[in-house]
Length: 193
Length: 193
Image (cartoon, rainbow over all chains, first blue to last red; front, side):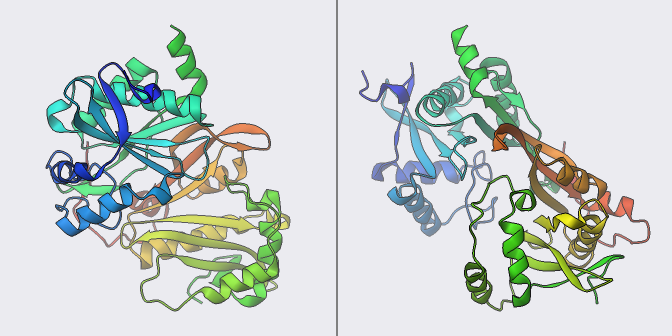
């Protein structure tokens, strides 16, 4: 079905971001349920992104010179060939501990697409890179993301590992980061079962 | 001397300090960072970096040399980086090994924290260290820092995987330990759920 089958699961596959994805990403990034959950450099997290900023973000995300450090993929449903989300891998300076960021657009949330996407990323990182620990983090005000984090503990074997406190303000309150990680041996033993 | 403690004071980094910076940076024990740097830095590299610093009214970092009061000797360096004005910054410290365990690091850290909370009005101060450096964890805990995030086995140090640790100290936690100082910033922002 897919030539690059290590980035393809039962229902979704990951592919690089293309020119046609710009307008879709524009819609998602300014969606009230997504705004402030995706890391955008040098921009107030809770203000809508201007068309110019969105273009700039898009250019950064598709910049081929950065792929050794950061990889951006669209999450696409096989069946309809429609994009339903985006996933980012941050390799950072140490390939032992990459980080992942997942965006699933609101209409496709809570249907298992995030879990399938994360599994694909773990398979890639643990089998094709030197990753030893893979982590992701959510913001404490984001109920959907918090529920996703807890589900990944039960379903994929992640562990909650704390999070930086007071990383931002929303609705008049400080919020924290909540972080989860999984070790390679934990993922491999989970896969064997 | 505004940045003065009991045993040390902090002053700007000067050209004359550079030979010592190079020594500490090239010592695997004192460089102490989770990313091990090759111990091959030269004085020329440091001079060049020093000369490239430019005057700014909007600096995102502060770099200081720790001076021992009794003999005006440079015994370490301490810095904050990644300043988000009125919100947060990340600190880092290097101390000459012959002054470890005598309260110099703690004193320097307290002087910097006072500057960050009193003069810059920060809400939270952060730092990164790892479990292979118990001295650094203890030093941070002495000033009230707590481990907020633990990326398990995230880095390799001395041939072993050790946990990568993120520690932080909230504004009111700092003032709880310093009853002689008053926290005059009440921005009416509470911690969220």
